Structures are given as C-alpha cells and as structure tokens.
Amino acid sequence: MILMTLQLVGVAVAVIFVISVIKASVRPANFPPGPPSLPLVGYVPFLDVRNIGRSFDKLSKRYGDVFSVFLGKSPCVVLNSYPVIKEALSMKEFSGRPSMFSGTFFQKGKIGITTTEGKDWELQRNFFHNHMVELVQGKGNLGFQDLILDEVHDLKMDLAKKVGEPLPVSYRFNVSIINILWTIASGRRLHSQQQEFQSVYECIDKITQFMSRAAIMSFIPGLSRIVPESISKMEKGRYHRDRFLNISQKWIREHKEAYRGNRGADLQDAYLAKVGEGAESFTEDGLGAVLREMFVVGSETQSTMLRWAIRILSVHKDVQRQVQDEMDELGERNRDIVWEDRHNMHFTRATVAEIQRFADITPNGLVHKTVADVDFHGFYLPKGTNVIANMTSCHRSPDYWKKPNEFYPAHFLDENGKFVDAKEGFVPYGIGTRRCPGEDVANMAIFLILANFLNTFSLRLPTGDKREIKTQYEAGTGFIRNPQAYKVILQHRE
Ligand code: HEM
Image 1 (cartoon, rainbow, N blue to C red):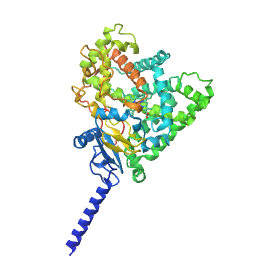
Image 2 (cartoon, rainbow, N blue to C red; image 1 turned 135 degrees about the horizontal axis):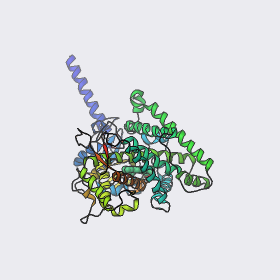
Image 3 (cartoon, rainbow, N blue to C red; image 1 turned 60 degrees about the vertical axis):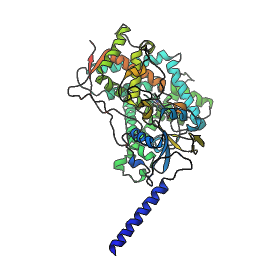
Image 4 (cartoon, rainbow, N blue to C red; image 1 turned 30 degrees about the vertical axis):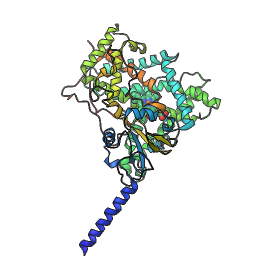
C-alpha cells in the first residue's frame, strides 16, 4: 500500500514536472525553434556560462542560425552566423535594448546611450559618436594624438624601471587607458597618484566586477532578492555605483564653474553647450550617465584588449619580431610612431586586427531588443523580443578564416601583403545601428600604445611559462572575455 502511494506520488511529481516544462517552453507562434526550458530559470542551467558562444554553436547545429533559448522566463533569439547577424543588426527594428539589471542598475534607470532606445538613444549616440570621430579624424586630431603619446611616454618610463623582472602589466595599462578617457572628458591628464584618480580607478574596477557577477540577474531578476549579500555583493555594488555617480556630478559642477561657452575642447564642454541651448534630450544627468558609461565600457574593453595583445605577442615572438622589423623599416627607431604611420605599417595593423579577432573579447556583444514586430527568415519576432548576436560564430567561422582557431595575422593581409581593412566576419565592435561609437578612439589608442611599446621593448616569457594562451573563465564573466593572468618580462630592444 505504502509502495503504491509512493509510486503514485512519484508519477504525479513527474507529470507536474513534464507539464511545467511544457508550459515553460511555450514560444510565441512561429517563433524561432529551440530547446525545452525549465520553469523560472529557463535553459540557463544547461548553458556553459564560461563559454556561452560554444553552447550556442552546439544548439545552432540542431536548430539553425536563428534559434531561441529561454534565459529565465523569457525566450531570447540567438543569431549564430555572420550573414544573419549583419542583416538583423543593420535593421532599425533590432535596435532596442532590454531593461536589464546589469545596465539599469549601474545607471539607476534607462539613461545615457547603452541602455536607451528610440529618439533619446539616437540623439545621445549621434552626439557622442560625432565627438569621438572628430577627435580622431577632425582638425584637432593631432592634439588628441599628442595626449595619447604623452601617456605612452609615461607608461614606457614607468615600465622601463621594471625591465628584466617578470611583471603583470594590467594595472599600468589601465592607468593609461583611464587617463586617455579622462582627457576626452575633461581635456586634461591626471596623475595616477592623485586621490581622484585612485577613486575613479576603484569605482570602475569594482563596478565592472560587480556587473560581471550580476550578469545572470539580468535574465533571472528574482535572484537579486534571494541570493545572500555574501554572494551577490549587492550592497557593495550599490555603494560603488553611488560613489561614481557622486564623482561624475562633482566633475560636472566643477566644469560648469569653469565653463565659458562651448570651447569645444572636451566632451563635457560640448555636451554642456547642448544643455545650454535647451537641445532635446540633453540634460546634466544625461551628461553624467554618458561620462560614467564611457569610463566603464571604454576602459575595461581597451585594457582587456591590451592584456590579450601582450600575452599573444609574448608567446608569438616571430610576429613580435616582424612588427618590430616593419617599424625599423620606417627608420628613426627613436622617434614616436604616429597615427599617420599606419599607412605604411600593413603587418602591424594586420597583427592588431588579428589580436581583436582571436581575443574575441565581447563574445555576445550587448543584448538587443526588437522595437517592432518583425518577420525575419520566415520567423515572427514580436516587439520586445530579446536578441543575442553570437560574435564567436563570426570570429571562429571557417567560412571567413583560413585558420579560425589559430593566431594568424595573414588573415588580414592580401596577396600583396597589404592590410585588408573591412573583412567579412570581423565584428569586434559589433555591427549595424548600435555598433560601438568608441571604435575610432579605441583603434587609435590601441595602435599607438602597442606600436610605441614594441618600438621600445621586446616581450619575453618568464622561465617555466607553458606558452599557453588561455581564457580566464569565471562563472558569470558576463560581457567581456579576459585572458588568464600572466607575467611578462620586458627587455630594451637591442
Ligand atoms: C577595444 C575596445 C572596444 C571594444 C571591443 C568595444 C566593443 C563594443 C561592443 C561589442 C558594443 C556593443 C554593440 C552592440 O550593442 O551591438 C559596444 C558598445 C558601446 N561602446 Fe564600445 N568597445 C570598445 C571601446 C569603447 C570605447 C573606447 C568607448 C568610449 C569611448 C566605447 C563606448 C561604447 C558605447 C557607449 C556603447 C553603447 C552603444 C549603443 O548602445 O548604441 N567603447 N562596444
């Protein structure tokens, strides 16, 4: 009798489970197909959170280039090849951003560029993008280049003191990148020993760490209420977010006091001029949000790329040597490499681009959302559908790359050894309407830092280094793919 009761209970539990899985897996009519889902958490427990790109690739083999997975309770469409990613992200219908925990928590709402959509987003983004392009391509570009080169001199001087010893380079690179962003924001450089610099550095570092840890909460929002503070570190996240908010408000107050009409020299002046004109969507709070996201998004991405670059080049000594040979051919080893030199540095540019492809630092970009009902590849995506583009499917595709899993600068050279600028399948900055507006600044900064660095130093591996180039996989690494921690030995070039 007891056995029968237990069996009945077992069957009932199994039936309830199957029904709840079926209910949780219901997709809108004619929605892209995908695997079944668990209630509340969706397909998340079955994804390799350390390498979501790989999990998506596996699912794509079964369900095609446009499929869907439940991340939490909502189905999310995944685009898993370069052609579908390019097509979708170029359409205005795919230009929305979901109200996700990681973005809205950091900005305390939908404000700035990264988290907004529609008219506000367009106005803010166009302003920011134009300002960045002007810095690199406009009349004042030599001034901006000089500021970067000043930073590179300081970086080299600091590191010259450590020649010959195994050292982690990450902190010093972060300092340079933050200082470059600082000059964009305020038109001046800061000393890394200054208290203000240390506070900003700490805020960016802690906010990025928190957002990585909290990435999962974007898909399962209920977690923020049940996960204990010791794990979620929510209070600390809040503290650093508010601290950075106060710092950005203080910058704006000080900038306003010194403001004498639009001098156009820095981002804050240019933005405050729009506020003064009463331009639609421009407010002081909006300026604070744009500054904060520029620092958080712009610093972590560029420092991570430089960390990959140093690791990859210290393992691939042959490539390092070829870059140095190319610079020697320009003559005058003792002068600075400037942005204009890039036209004669095909191998160096191919190397930098290949570092970006191989490192694939934003494997899933940022999540998009449809802003209208869309018919796409025979499927129906209602307004408000979340969409993820799996950039790894582009950067590791044998359709575009001869050696997709190897580091191979020749991917970016034509048969005459000339650098090939726009390659199909190359999307480190995303593609389409929401493509990264900081791309020009990042390309210039990374090129100048790396080229001048290699013009002065050679990179060597410490004894015992296994020459592996590995990713630092941590649960919930979130937006950015980091290299495993390493040390490198710098030597002055002979
Ligand atoms: C190596 C450096 C960088 C990489 C790899 C990178 C990559 C990306 C990617 C993949 C996106 C998401 C695109 C999408 O939503 O489809 C993005 C967005 C963005 N990036 Fe970058 N980025 C870099 C540097 C920068 C810098 C230096 C800045 C600022 C100066 C910046 C500011 C932004 C902003 C504001 C957005 C949001 C754009 C929007 O939502 O419309 N990024 N970036």
